[in-house]
Each structure stands twice: as C-alpha cells, then as structure tokens.
Length: 437
Image (tube, rainbow, N blue to C red; front, top):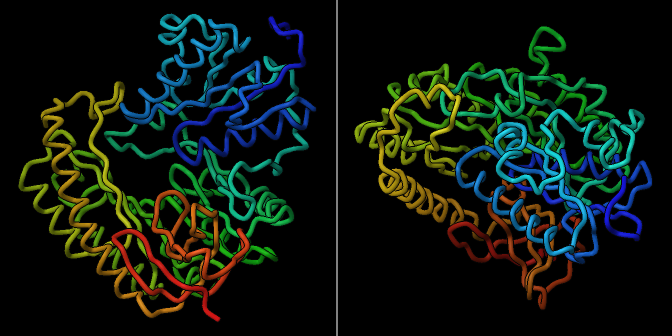
C-alpha cells in the first residue's frame, strides 16, 4: 500500500459510539497486530500516518460527532500530517454512497460487515486463527464481550437493523473460549453485550440459549464478575433468573431497556409488550433475584407521545424506582418505521421531558445511595484521578453507572483489584468510602 510517507505505516484507530463499536475496533486492532502491522487505538502521540475512524450512526448527535471527527482528519490529511483516511462502522455502512460523494477526501468507506475488505486495504490478511482472541483497549481487568450481532426487533424508532443486519449469535463454545482468553490475560469482569441479548441462540440452536451460556461462563475459572446488558423486556427469558441468583460470579445486575410504559406509546413504538406485561417481567426479576440492580433506558418525544403518556411515564419512574436510568430524546431516523410518522413534538419539549425524568431519577438515586452509608461493599478499582482511587460495585457497569471514590491519602489500592469499602458519604450518582481494615 503506497502512501506519501517514506516511514513504515502506522495506523491509529478512533472509536465513536457504543461498547459494541469498541469491540469491533479491538478485533480490528488484534488482526492488524497479528499481521505484524504497527497499530494503536486512540493514541495521543499523533505519529500515525493512517487513520481509521469507526463511526456511530445511531441518532443525530452521534452522527454529527462522527461527521465532525471525519472532517477533523480530512483537515489533517490536507495539511499533510496523515497520508490515508479510512472510515468504517455504522454511519459508513448506512450512508456510504452519500458520504463518498460529500467527503471525497476519505480514501475508502467500509460497512459494519466488511472487516476482511478493510484489512486487505490496510495490507493485512484476515486471520481465522485469531477468532476468540483480541487485544482490549479498556483497563486490563474488565472487557466487553459481544455475544451476537444485529437485531430482529421491529422497534419503530431504531435504525440498528439497517446498520448491523439481522441477529447472528456466536456459538457458546466461541464465547467461552474468548472469555477464557480474556481471563488468561488478566480480565476479571466481562460485560456481555449485544443489540438484543435475550434473543441469543435462536438463529443457531432454534431456541433461546442465554441461560445455558450464562451457566457455561459461570464455570470459567478466574472470571469474578459477569454482567448482562441489553435484555429486552419483550419475550424475556425468565429461565436465566435462577441461574443469576445461584451463581456468585454473575452480577446481580441487569440492563433492561423498557423505553416507555404507556400502552399507547409502546404500541406506536412496536415494542411487542404492554404496560401490564412490563410490570410482570420487572417484578418477577426482582422477586427471583433478590437485591438485583436494574438499569433501564427511556425514550421520550416519540411521535404520538401525548402529555398524558408522559405523565404516565413519570409516574412509572416514581413508582418503580429503577436503580439506574438513562433518558434519550427521539431522533427522526430515515428508513425507520417511525420516520413515516410526523415528528410532531418540538425539540424543546423533548428536552424538557428528558430533563424532568432525570431530575426524578436524581432524587431516587440519592435516596438509594444514602441507604448504603455505613455498609461495606465489594469494589473493583478502575483508575486514579487526582487524589482519589475510583472504582465500582457489583451494581455498576463502567462508563454509565455510579462510582465509588476512596481518598488516596488514606489508603492504597492496586488498580484492577477488589477491596471492601465502607461507605461514608453519598452523592446523587457517586459513593465515597474508606477501605475496610
């Protein structure tokens, strides 16, 4: 591959968007290293002559961030500071032709399923023997583990199937192998991720196999925390609950995106579930896994959401008291079912509704955190910032949930290690404590 530089090529991968994109970048990095190509992930040295931007195309803000990042590196290329610029990921998959026309300075565009083509362009061969192995870019003690790709759900607002295709599960054997390889390299906690983890196994085995997967992962020596993300409430596989309850290394934690509670909005969203059934599923989870932490996401401002629907949603948030909650405003995405509807709620109303829900959740969170004062919790430490060691409990996933702060002048902990921490103070979304002697 010829470039303007006389030096050996060095590739820097830039990742935008979700943890699923991060895993894709880690696989790319592993393949490049396996081909003995000098590659880094989000290096700050500015010494790479080839840039690969892995984009997100989920909602407007994410798309804009991806465009801005691409244009930033277009400027770098035109200034002669880099030789080649390649773009992959969801935005590239969804809008490849339009982007190629509008930003011709990019050397090539690749979709989410075109890793072999991208590797060939970068002068590498796709090495099948590296399947199950990857270099992680997170701290060594935790990693994301993708159990499937794509999604078969018909949700009105979501463009993921357009960018990621239909649901495709990895085999249980492949996932367990990857988990063992991660543990061998120092990983203690894995986050199981997918577009829809509850659909796992249907395409491979003709039935849901998430329970069997969890049972097999729980037997991996050295794997101390297994955390499950993105479990849809519709057709929720209740057989996983006794397995979660029985295994100490499966976190009593579940990310279950309900999106809404009004029957009117759930129907428009094509979520395949009702308010009554949502409550039944959530209550059963809490009953069968005592003490479980439930995280959810809510979408406000979908076409057809009335003030009455929103008031019902607010009451639901108050009544159910989720441990963790995130809110998104509706984004009018081309080629989705909802795009055929009128985007009839003004942006300022969407934002106001999101802020109202987060204000409610902040009150809920501070009360739940105050109840932990005086308790001693198992904490894994991720990093040190300023005068604090910063970690998480079993109830917290990296990046999105609460953190535990321990003053560094009062104690020393090794990053990546567990310690028992007595909670002494509580804030809205953080806990402060002391290492228990």
